[in-house]
Length: 503
Image 1 (tube, helix red, strand yellow):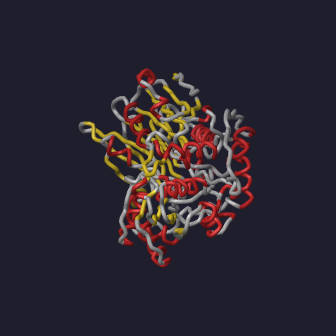
Image 2 (cartoon, helix red, strand yellow):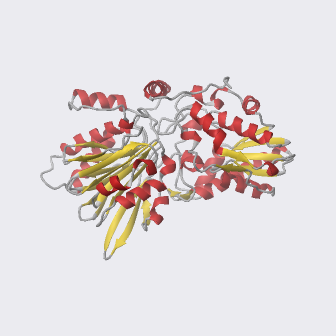
Image 3 (cartoon, one colour):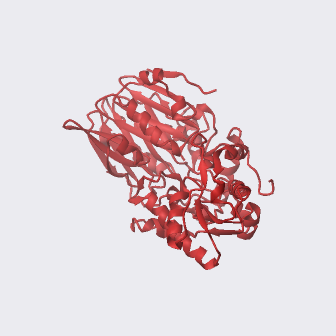
């Protein structure tokens, strides 16, 4: 999971890019980067949060009326600062690229680039592979001087033919413009916006439209699966449906990943989560248990708990206070780091728990360790009974498209029954939503979505190359190459801050 942004304007875009990345920070907290262009490329990237990577001095150097940015959460490659994005190649024209998603045929593409194109790759990142595939494809269009939209679309057509998996990407081509494209299954989100500048128009392409309003951009639409967008140096918008796409968005975007105020593929994230809670309420009704209070696990659990409490006619209360300075534990690198930070992250309001039968509501249960710790906190606060509800269905399979669900051994529901999980987390009752209810919650906002990328629940994937063998290979490679990533089994209870100017 990552966040990408591109802006093409008539004035310096660094403030738009910086503010936009702040709005997309929830999509990645390991690294951030921005590259701008004004006859030269100006790049700054490093490990860390957006606010830590960029300072006044470096921001002052990132000049130009066009640029792209990225916030990273590593699910391929490793957590090294050398894999922070955007990536850059010098030919043709100079191209920078930022990517959200995971390629599923990285090894084959890497071998082809090295053996046939004589390319040198500096990292294990699939995003660097994607950039080089695009670079070679653009060179093969044999442009002379100025790029035409046909050159760009021809190159992206080649990318679509070669690259498999999930890739919503933005690219900056020196002296030519910016490009955005979304894979033919539309697994990861990508959206287009527009802003008036006098009688002229400026454009933004980003992962989520939560960033648009704050930057005074008007949301135009989602980029279609298999579509490419090219904004030239005169800020003229060119679009082309390169291949016939089939929309299979990742269902986890609505469950957990996206910001609640975003609307993706026509479906508002907040409202979808409220509906998930309403459907979940029907399962809890059938259990015929007495509940005094519904309490969300912040932040994602809030709209889910609100919908559930409203449906059950049970009071909703905020009982767990979140420390805003602790980052999202699900996307922290390493299980030990997740556990340690959880001690500081959530604080119970004891009056809301003492001698009460409470229902805790969360978006999902992945490894089970966070849920277990939360139940312990609530019991220590004096709760008489603690029930736990997950809007998501049991997560039983890896996700190869950019979520940190890489191997079955790390997924508690892949190895244990619901009753065994209940005992492990220490709850008096455990409830899961169903895949069907998740689908209904989202399709209610857009009936044109026929199928989702939901392999983490069903072990069925939208791209045909994903097999059990490939999943196992991806998981082994990922755990071998990522730095400092340690995972707990069920049974076990300085940034680089230099600004580089590229000529």
